Image 1 (cartoon, rainbow, N blue to C red):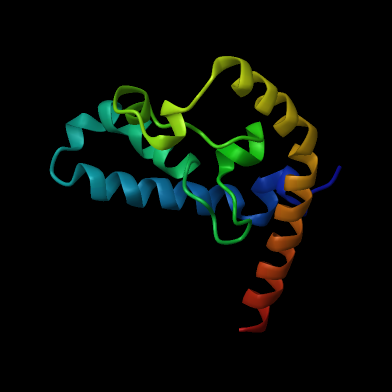
Image 2 (cartoon, rainbow, N blue to C red):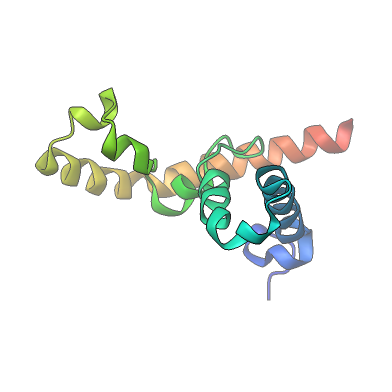
Length: 122
């Protein structure tokens, strides 16, 4: 079993690091409103999953799904990205993104290795 890679995040501290970020963001968001945890948690998780990480240069969402997430607000108040969306073209783009997702993951892996070397050298 591989225990020193992102596949096994419990062994390399990535899970704890992610939890720490989520907990700190929840504390900032909630302030004195601690009883609103259930209401605020989805927003904090969404923000974490759609924020590019320094180590990979990609969002966790794009690393998993191979495409950038569209935030709910963009569906209510269209942006340039969502207003020119054509369902047929969108489906073709998603298929194309699936073809290149492994390449994006490899790039993220190389960036993460370089980031780790840089951090170890500091």
